[in-house]
Image (cartoon, rainbow, N blue to C red; front, side):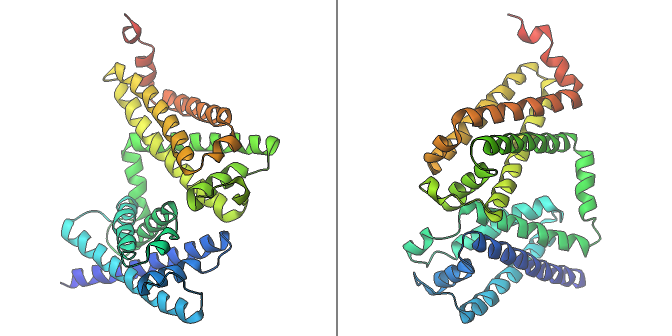
Length: 320
Protein backbone atom coordinates (compact mmCIF):
# COMPACT_ATOMS: atom_id res chain seq x y z
CA UNK A 1 0.00 0.00 0.00
CA UNK A 2 2.85 2.35 0.83
CA UNK A 3 4.43 1.65 -2.57
CA UNK A 4 1.13 2.34 -4.30
CA UNK A 5 0.78 5.63 -2.43
CA UNK A 6 4.26 6.69 -3.46
CA UNK A 7 3.53 5.84 -7.06
CA UNK A 8 0.23 7.74 -7.00
CA UNK A 9 2.05 10.71 -5.48
CA UNK A 10 4.71 10.44 -8.20
CA UNK A 11 1.93 10.36 -10.80
CA UNK A 12 0.33 13.44 -9.23
CA UNK A 13 3.59 15.42 -9.42
CA UNK A 14 4.31 14.07 -12.91
CA UNK A 15 0.86 15.14 -14.07
CA UNK A 16 1.40 18.66 -12.72
CA UNK A 17 4.76 18.84 -14.50
CA UNK A 18 3.17 17.61 -17.74
CA UNK A 19 0.40 20.19 -17.38
CA UNK A 20 2.96 22.93 -16.83
CA UNK A 21 4.92 21.97 -19.94
CA UNK A 22 1.72 21.90 -21.99
CA UNK A 23 0.67 25.32 -20.66
CA UNK A 24 4.03 26.83 -21.61
CA UNK A 25 3.91 25.20 -25.05
CA UNK A 26 0.47 26.60 -25.85
CA UNK A 27 1.43 29.99 -24.46
CA UNK A 28 4.10 30.24 -27.16
CA UNK A 29 1.74 28.60 -29.67
CA UNK A 30 -0.78 31.41 -29.10
CA UNK A 31 1.96 34.03 -29.27
CA UNK A 32 3.06 32.61 -32.62
CA UNK A 33 -0.45 33.08 -33.96
CA UNK A 34 -0.69 36.61 -32.61
CA UNK A 35 -3.45 35.71 -30.11
CA UNK A 36 -1.89 35.56 -26.61
CA UNK A 37 -3.76 33.32 -24.13
CA UNK A 38 -6.38 32.43 -26.73
CA UNK A 39 -6.23 28.69 -25.98
CA UNK A 40 -7.15 28.91 -22.26
CA UNK A 41 -9.93 31.38 -23.14
CA UNK A 42 -11.22 29.02 -25.83
CA UNK A 43 -11.20 26.05 -23.44
CA UNK A 44 -12.96 28.08 -20.76
CA UNK A 45 -15.65 28.84 -23.32
CA UNK A 46 -15.95 25.12 -24.06
CA UNK A 47 -16.43 24.41 -20.35
CA UNK A 48 -19.22 26.97 -19.90
CA UNK A 49 -20.70 26.33 -23.40
CA UNK A 50 -20.17 29.84 -24.71
CA UNK A 51 -19.00 30.54 -28.26
CA UNK A 52 -17.24 33.82 -27.50
CA UNK A 53 -15.12 34.50 -24.43
CA UNK A 54 -12.84 37.50 -23.98
CA UNK A 55 -9.49 36.97 -22.29
CA UNK A 56 -9.44 38.23 -18.71
CA UNK A 57 -7.45 37.61 -15.53
CA UNK A 58 -10.36 35.83 -13.88
CA UNK A 59 -10.81 33.43 -16.80
CA UNK A 60 -7.11 32.65 -16.97
CA UNK A 61 -6.91 31.94 -13.22
CA UNK A 62 -10.07 29.84 -13.27
CA UNK A 63 -9.01 27.77 -16.25
CA UNK A 64 -5.48 27.34 -14.88
CA UNK A 65 -6.92 25.72 -11.74
CA UNK A 66 -9.08 23.39 -13.84
CA UNK A 67 -6.16 22.63 -16.16
CA UNK A 68 -3.78 21.57 -13.39
CA UNK A 69 -6.51 19.64 -11.57
CA UNK A 70 -7.21 17.67 -14.74
CA UNK A 71 -3.54 16.94 -15.31
CA UNK A 72 -3.06 15.90 -11.70
CA UNK A 73 -5.88 13.41 -12.25
CA UNK A 74 -4.33 12.19 -15.50
CA UNK A 75 -1.01 11.72 -13.69
CA UNK A 76 -2.58 9.67 -10.89
CA UNK A 77 -4.49 7.63 -13.48
CA UNK A 78 -1.22 6.93 -15.29
CA UNK A 79 0.42 5.76 -12.04
CA UNK A 80 -2.54 3.50 -11.28
CA UNK A 81 -2.50 2.00 -14.79
CA UNK A 82 1.25 1.39 -14.55
CA UNK A 83 0.79 -0.33 -11.20
CA UNK A 84 -2.11 -2.43 -12.49
CA UNK A 85 -0.74 -3.35 -15.93
CA UNK A 86 2.94 -3.51 -15.00
CA UNK A 87 4.10 -1.54 -18.04
CA UNK A 88 7.50 0.20 -17.88
CA UNK A 89 7.80 3.90 -17.11
CA UNK A 90 9.70 5.05 -20.19
CA UNK A 91 9.38 7.84 -22.72
CA UNK A 92 7.74 5.62 -25.32
CA UNK A 93 4.88 4.57 -23.03
CA UNK A 94 4.62 8.18 -21.85
CA UNK A 95 4.29 9.49 -25.40
CA UNK A 96 1.59 6.91 -26.18
CA UNK A 97 -0.28 7.75 -22.98
CA UNK A 98 -0.20 11.46 -23.78
CA UNK A 99 -1.08 10.90 -27.43
CA UNK A 100 -4.10 8.70 -26.84
CA UNK A 101 -5.40 9.03 -23.27
CA UNK A 102 -4.69 12.75 -22.75
CA UNK A 103 -5.83 13.71 -26.25
CA UNK A 104 -9.01 11.67 -25.75
CA UNK A 105 -9.66 13.57 -22.50
CA UNK A 106 -9.15 16.87 -24.36
CA UNK A 107 -11.68 16.09 -27.07
CA UNK A 108 -14.19 14.64 -24.60
CA UNK A 109 -13.99 18.02 -22.85
CA UNK A 110 -15.24 19.64 -26.08
CA UNK A 111 -18.46 17.62 -26.23
CA UNK A 112 -20.55 20.38 -24.67
CA UNK A 113 -18.88 23.14 -26.67
CA UNK A 114 -20.91 24.93 -29.39
CA UNK A 115 -20.13 23.67 -32.89
CA UNK A 116 -18.71 27.03 -33.96
CA UNK A 117 -16.33 26.98 -31.04
CA UNK A 118 -15.11 23.47 -31.81
CA UNK A 119 -14.06 24.60 -35.29
CA UNK A 120 -11.75 27.19 -33.69
CA UNK A 121 -10.05 24.60 -31.46
CA UNK A 122 -6.25 24.30 -31.67
CA UNK A 123 -5.19 22.18 -34.65
CA UNK A 124 -4.90 18.44 -34.04
CA UNK A 125 -1.12 18.35 -34.76
CA UNK A 126 -0.52 20.87 -31.97
CA UNK A 127 -2.85 19.01 -29.59
CA UNK A 128 -1.30 15.60 -30.29
CA UNK A 129 2.27 16.87 -30.10
CA UNK A 130 1.64 18.83 -26.89
CA UNK A 131 -0.08 15.92 -25.16
CA UNK A 132 2.61 13.47 -26.26
CA UNK A 133 5.31 15.80 -24.90
CA UNK A 134 3.41 16.20 -21.62
CA UNK A 135 3.10 12.42 -21.38
CA UNK A 136 6.85 12.05 -21.86
CA UNK A 137 7.51 14.56 -19.06
CA UNK A 138 5.02 12.78 -16.79
CA UNK A 139 6.52 9.32 -17.27
CA UNK A 140 10.08 10.62 -17.10
CA UNK A 141 9.35 12.01 -13.64
CA UNK A 142 7.87 8.68 -12.57
CA UNK A 143 11.09 7.06 -13.83
CA UNK A 144 13.30 9.30 -11.77
CA UNK A 145 11.47 8.71 -8.49
CA UNK A 146 11.26 4.94 -8.99
CA UNK A 147 13.88 2.23 -8.94
CA UNK A 148 13.76 1.92 -12.74
CA UNK A 149 16.36 3.71 -14.86
CA UNK A 150 15.13 6.89 -16.51
CA UNK A 151 16.75 8.18 -19.66
CA UNK A 152 19.33 5.43 -19.26
CA UNK A 153 16.51 2.97 -19.87
CA UNK A 154 15.83 4.57 -23.24
CA UNK A 155 19.52 4.48 -24.18
CA UNK A 156 19.72 0.82 -23.18
CA UNK A 157 16.66 0.19 -25.31
CA UNK A 158 18.31 1.80 -28.33
CA UNK A 159 21.54 -0.11 -27.76
CA UNK A 160 19.63 -3.38 -27.55
CA UNK A 161 17.22 -2.81 -30.44
CA UNK A 162 19.36 -2.40 -33.51
CA UNK A 163 16.50 -1.86 -35.96
CA UNK A 164 15.03 1.03 -33.95
CA UNK A 165 18.43 2.65 -33.40
CA UNK A 166 19.41 2.61 -37.06
CA UNK A 167 15.90 3.63 -38.10
CA UNK A 168 16.06 6.72 -35.89
CA UNK A 169 19.50 7.65 -37.23
CA UNK A 170 18.35 7.14 -40.82
CA UNK A 171 15.21 9.21 -40.21
CA UNK A 172 17.18 12.08 -38.70
CA UNK A 173 19.58 12.05 -41.65
CA UNK A 174 16.69 12.10 -44.13
CA UNK A 175 14.96 14.93 -42.27
CA UNK A 176 18.17 16.98 -42.23
CA UNK A 177 18.69 16.49 -45.97
CA UNK A 178 15.16 17.65 -46.80
CA UNK A 179 15.42 20.60 -44.39
CA UNK A 180 18.74 21.73 -45.92
CA UNK A 181 17.40 21.26 -49.47
CA UNK A 182 14.38 23.49 -48.84
CA UNK A 183 16.51 26.05 -47.00
CA UNK A 184 18.66 26.34 -50.15
CA UNK A 185 15.61 26.50 -52.46
CA UNK A 186 13.89 29.06 -50.24
CA UNK A 187 17.00 31.23 -50.08
CA UNK A 188 17.34 31.21 -53.87
CA UNK A 189 13.70 31.44 -54.99
CA UNK A 190 11.74 32.90 -52.05
CA UNK A 191 12.69 33.74 -48.47
CA UNK A 192 14.72 31.60 -46.04
CA UNK A 193 12.46 29.25 -44.02
CA UNK A 194 9.43 29.97 -46.24
CA UNK A 195 8.69 26.25 -46.80
CA UNK A 196 8.43 25.19 -43.12
CA UNK A 197 6.45 28.36 -42.37
CA UNK A 198 4.03 27.67 -45.25
CA UNK A 199 3.56 24.02 -44.28
CA UNK A 200 3.05 25.00 -40.63
CA UNK A 201 0.43 27.52 -41.72
CA UNK A 202 -1.46 24.80 -43.58
CA UNK A 203 -1.11 22.10 -40.90
CA UNK A 204 -1.73 24.18 -37.79
CA UNK A 205 -4.09 26.88 -39.08
CA UNK A 206 -5.59 25.54 -42.29
CA UNK A 207 -4.82 28.83 -44.06
CA UNK A 208 -6.64 29.13 -47.43
CA UNK A 209 -4.18 31.49 -49.18
CA UNK A 210 -0.42 32.21 -49.30
CA UNK A 211 -1.09 35.64 -47.77
CA UNK A 212 -1.54 33.96 -44.38
CA UNK A 213 2.04 32.60 -44.33
CA UNK A 214 4.04 34.13 -41.49
CA UNK A 215 7.75 33.35 -41.17
CA UNK A 216 8.30 33.36 -37.41
CA UNK A 217 9.89 31.17 -34.73
CA UNK A 218 6.82 29.35 -33.39
CA UNK A 219 5.34 27.93 -36.65
CA UNK A 220 8.79 27.05 -38.04
CA UNK A 221 9.74 25.24 -34.83
CA UNK A 222 6.38 23.44 -34.68
CA UNK A 223 6.63 22.15 -38.23
CA UNK A 224 10.30 21.22 -37.80
CA UNK A 225 9.46 19.00 -34.82
CA UNK A 226 6.62 17.34 -36.75
CA UNK A 227 8.93 16.97 -39.78
CA UNK A 228 11.63 15.13 -37.80
CA UNK A 229 9.08 12.96 -35.96
CA UNK A 230 7.52 11.84 -39.25
CA UNK A 231 10.90 11.02 -40.81
CA UNK A 232 11.97 9.07 -37.72
CA UNK A 233 8.84 6.90 -37.93
CA UNK A 234 9.47 6.37 -41.64
CA UNK A 235 13.12 5.55 -40.93
CA UNK A 236 12.22 2.90 -38.36
CA UNK A 237 9.81 1.28 -40.83
CA UNK A 238 12.46 1.21 -43.59
CA UNK A 239 15.08 -0.07 -41.14
CA UNK A 240 12.78 -2.96 -40.23
CA UNK A 241 12.28 -3.84 -43.90
CA UNK A 242 16.02 -3.59 -44.61
CA UNK A 243 16.75 -5.97 -41.73
CA UNK A 244 14.30 -8.53 -43.10
CA UNK A 245 15.55 -8.37 -46.70
CA UNK A 246 18.42 -10.75 -45.88
CA UNK A 247 15.86 -13.38 -44.86
CA UNK A 248 13.49 -12.74 -47.76
CA UNK A 249 15.22 -10.83 -50.62
CA UNK A 250 12.03 -10.06 -52.63
CA UNK A 251 11.02 -7.84 -49.70
CA UNK A 252 13.44 -5.28 -51.18
CA UNK A 253 10.63 -4.31 -53.53
CA UNK A 254 8.60 -3.44 -50.43
CA UNK A 255 11.02 -0.63 -49.66
CA UNK A 256 10.41 0.87 -53.10
CA UNK A 257 6.65 0.56 -52.59
CA UNK A 258 6.95 2.19 -49.15
CA UNK A 259 8.82 5.15 -50.65
CA UNK A 260 6.17 5.61 -53.36
CA UNK A 261 3.39 5.42 -50.77
CA UNK A 262 5.25 7.97 -48.64
CA UNK A 263 5.46 10.39 -51.57
CA UNK A 264 1.82 9.98 -52.55
CA UNK A 265 0.66 10.33 -48.94
CA UNK A 266 2.63 13.52 -48.37
CA UNK A 267 1.45 15.20 -51.58
CA UNK A 268 -2.18 14.09 -51.03
CA UNK A 269 -2.17 15.34 -47.43
CA UNK A 270 -0.79 18.73 -48.44
CA UNK A 271 -3.28 18.99 -51.32
CA UNK A 272 -6.22 18.21 -49.01
CA UNK A 273 -5.13 20.75 -46.40
CA UNK A 274 -4.33 23.52 -48.88
CA UNK A 275 -4.09 23.13 -52.65
CA UNK A 276 -2.26 26.45 -53.01
CA UNK A 277 0.77 25.05 -51.22
CA UNK A 278 1.67 22.82 -54.19
CA UNK A 279 1.76 25.86 -56.47
CA UNK A 280 3.89 27.79 -53.99
CA UNK A 281 6.47 25.07 -53.33
CA UNK A 282 6.56 23.43 -56.79
CA UNK A 283 6.09 19.67 -57.09
CA UNK A 284 9.60 19.15 -58.50
CA UNK A 285 11.29 20.61 -55.41
CA UNK A 286 9.29 18.28 -53.15
CA UNK A 287 10.16 15.28 -55.34
CA UNK A 288 13.88 16.10 -55.52
CA UNK A 289 14.09 16.74 -51.77
CA UNK A 290 12.54 13.40 -50.91
CA UNK A 291 14.67 11.55 -53.49
CA UNK A 292 17.80 13.05 -51.92
CA UNK A 293 16.57 11.98 -48.49
CA UNK A 294 15.86 8.47 -49.77
CA UNK A 295 19.38 8.20 -51.25
CA UNK A 296 21.01 9.31 -47.99
CA UNK A 297 18.84 7.04 -45.85
CA UNK A 298 19.39 4.14 -48.23
CA UNK A 299 23.16 4.74 -48.23
CA UNK A 300 23.24 4.71 -44.44
CA UNK A 301 21.20 1.49 -44.20
CA UNK A 302 23.35 -0.04 -46.94
CA UNK A 303 26.40 0.59 -44.74
CA UNK A 304 24.98 -0.62 -41.39
CA UNK A 305 23.25 -3.69 -42.86
CA UNK A 306 25.86 -5.53 -44.98
CA UNK A 307 23.42 -8.39 -45.47
CA UNK A 308 20.97 -5.87 -46.97
CA UNK A 309 23.52 -4.85 -49.60
CA UNK A 310 24.37 -8.47 -50.36
CA UNK A 311 20.72 -9.39 -50.81
CA UNK A 312 20.06 -6.47 -53.18
CA UNK A 313 23.04 -7.38 -55.37
CA UNK A 314 22.28 -11.10 -55.44
CA UNK A 315 21.64 -12.46 -58.94
CA UNK A 316 18.77 -14.60 -57.68
CA UNK A 317 16.73 -11.50 -56.81
CA UNK A 318 16.86 -10.11 -60.35
CA UNK A 319 16.83 -13.40 -62.24
CA UNK A 320 13.89 -14.17 -64.51
